[in-house]
Amino acid sequence: RKEVEQDPGPFNVPEGATVAFNCTYSNSASQSFFWYRQDCRKEPKLLMSVYSSGNEDGRFTAQLNRASQYISLLIRDSKLSDSATYLCVVNTPGTSYGKLTFGQGTILTVHP
Amino acid sequence: GAGVSQSPSNKVTEKGKDVELRCDPISGHTALYWYRQSLGQGLEFLIYFQGNSAPDKSGLPSDRFSAERTGGSVSTLTIQRTQQEDSAVYLCASSLSGFAYEQYFGPGTRLTVT
Image 1: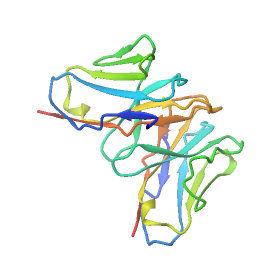
Image 2: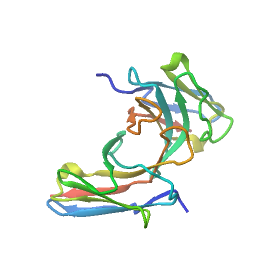
Image 3: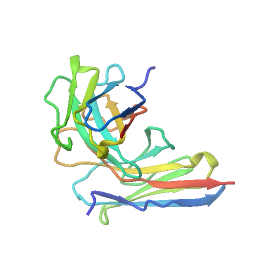
Image 4: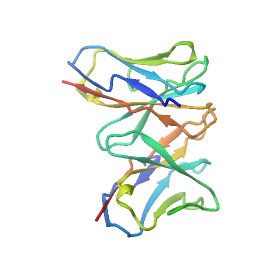
């Protein structure tokens, strides 16, 4: 089983749609969770951290379910500029530093 | 301020040749990471440097891969006797410290082995 699994998509949605991505992680000892965004042929950039109580940043909402080892990202009112690959990222337990494990990413295309 | 820079941006090499990839982290960032991203794949951790401490080399796929970080700043990833399966984008990232989870990535070096 992969340490971090995501539905690779692609998700093709019209502008204004709401879209949700899911991610599962295998190590129950993981404590820190993130969503990174990667535009086509660009480097990944931190989109948002995921907190236990869930958190929102504008049109983006992240949720964590520790019992199910499940993370989600909800994007409301999709924009063309949201088209990118969304990477689910989890800290790697058992290391003495902030080692991260990246999922393979979910591709989102928002069309007019 | 200046972000993470990497050079070259693209490298085409023949199978069997050695290549060197360079990473210049954000000034003041003590932690430096190398990753590899193959087409359609997630980021594969290669190596981690923290200041002048011994690196975590656990992700290096074979002994053809090595990396160094001189003076706690610039890092070089060397691949000897390149193989076609080494073709990928090599990404470098830095963070404020080894405990800081936000990693800032460079634009990557796209390596093609022919």
